[in-house]
Image (cartoon, rainbow, N blue to C red; front, side, top):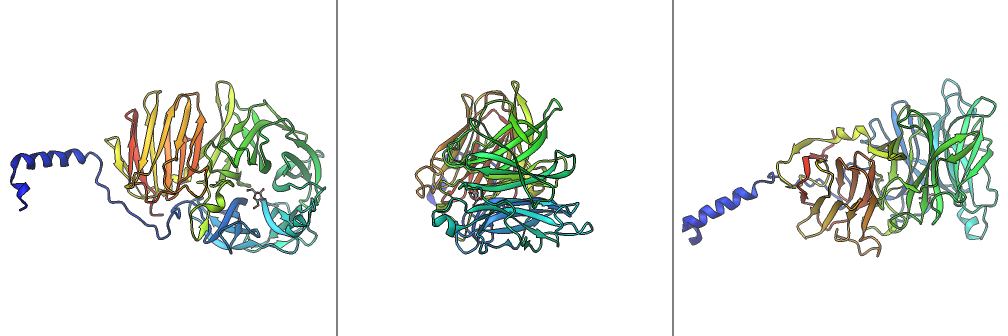
Length: 497
Ligand code: FRU
């Protein structure tokens, strides 16, 4: 026995100290990481570069997720459409690359629809085609100083998205002489003659143009939107036009528009407009600038097509400011968790809420409720949920053994995520920063999703959202909560079912 242990008072003191330390549950940290920073439950490409989600469509029990992909490098390059499928939005199966670049150019962002009535004639009524509408970006033409190097084109699949054929007469919408002319998002639409057709929402410089078509092959300009509306700190990209029902039962149209740069946290971000869409024309209800997510890392997100009654969204969890220099090795970038968009009202103003898609709870493998305000974390992949007891400041602090930390606070009408001391940040001068969202109304619940290199914060189930990437030198091991948080639960999301 070491000499110190002969002192009974010291033994008692050590016993008491030991008891005091047991208030936090004894948790073994479980690391299932083979690759540093690789998320466990977020979608990432097998290797190489990824940016925007593309062509999201639900068909025959599968959610399809295509994405901007350069398989040969971890920096942006000749764009392909990578492909994955899932029947539950959370477990993804990688598929072969769906669309490869060719002599007409790189394959930029776009959308996909089920052409159920075979309006395009590219399939048959018995076997309707899946049609992808994307932008060709002709790199040589751009480099030679032309301005008409982007055009819209289509590809189709007759085997549920497994293989894709490019339309022989591409492009279907040639460039009218405008440098930024891209990212078509197509949805079903009733044409002015009452027939069922299609509507394309297209990003054109810092404007949106709407085009209509009866057959996905010939397009007619309906209108343009954007002058003196919204934020214009950069080019507009990746739009989406979504019909939604407001809490008072009225029908509204939501126009998502990503912008780069010019976001509220520097770099890229997604703004949205709420209004009416009548006779091919979008009219906003007001002049407010609204942001879908106040974190720095949610860009170019759009919704799945061919899903009834839900607006399922996924975004690229990065920011063009530093996307190409973040410290991952074999791959770059993840998608956000899937989210469900809806409208809510606060003090007479309509806003879009982004709730975690309900499917996400299927990831929980074990859960425990804390009886204290601090805990060790069981793994790098967790969800934390809590209720906010009183309308006042709250805080949540994440730490690792190296003293790196992230602080989440609600104070003075702002919800903030401080990642200024969160580990690796020297790859870009703007990475280490505090990001805040305005919130003037009552905060009742908090949900936090942590995965190796990300943090997604949802207040009131998505009324306020901040999405941030983080690159801690070692995983987060400890979490501390302010004492006005109640029913604090930690859900382990490590092993997929
Ligand atoms: C948005 C974006 C799109 C474009 C794609 C190119 O992040 O710039 O406008 O189609 O990425 O990869």
